[in-house]
Each structure stands twice: as C-alpha cells, then as structure tokens.
Length: 52
Ligand SMILES: [Zn+2]
Ligand SMILES: [Zn+2]
Image (tube, protein in one colour):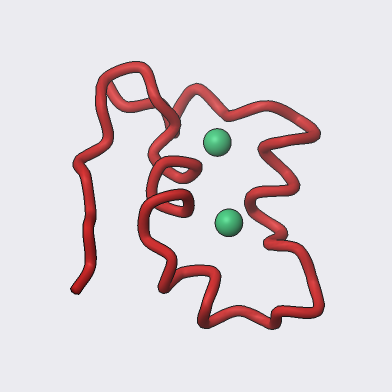
C-alpha cells in the first residue's frame, strides 16, 4: 500500500514526492545518497519545481 499525498502549494514537488513515495529511493543504489535530494539540499529547490 502506498500512501501518497498530493504536493501542497509552495512545496517542492521533487522533495515532496521523494519524502512520501519511498519507492523512488528504494529503486536507487542504497550505497549512494539520492543525487536529486542532495542537489536540492545543497543548492536549494529550483523555483520551477515548486508547486503552484
Ligand atoms: Zn531523493
Ligand atoms: Zn526540492
């Protein structure tokens, strides 16, 4: 069962989906951090990913 919540306004769609859809990270190489999440943590979330 997947518990997915729609991304609320003002939240980053990528960070939201990665936080709530664990399948995304489960499919990745566990020995590495998620490159997309690391990018957002270091550089901030790009405005085009923010839910309007
Ligand atoms: Zn991620
Ligand atoms: Zn983000």
